[in-house]
Length: 90
Image (cartoon, rainbow, N blue to C red):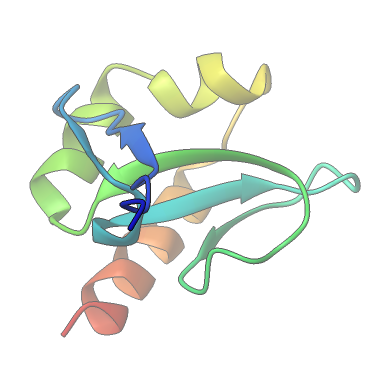
């Protein structure tokens, strides 16, 4: 029997390759709206981070989200996503 391939994605914070289901997706929609996608099914351009706030902070400080999505992200949006990440992964 053929083994199923596990999709791997790279975390923007730590740079490690991990299975897609272990990561949280950050998505930029066609309306230029950036949000956390805990389901992994929203339409748009996606980037992945570990479920830890440490990786989120590392990606935030290095401005990796801004580079990936080619746009400026407000501090308020970062704070909103961080609190959503903390509450969504418990």
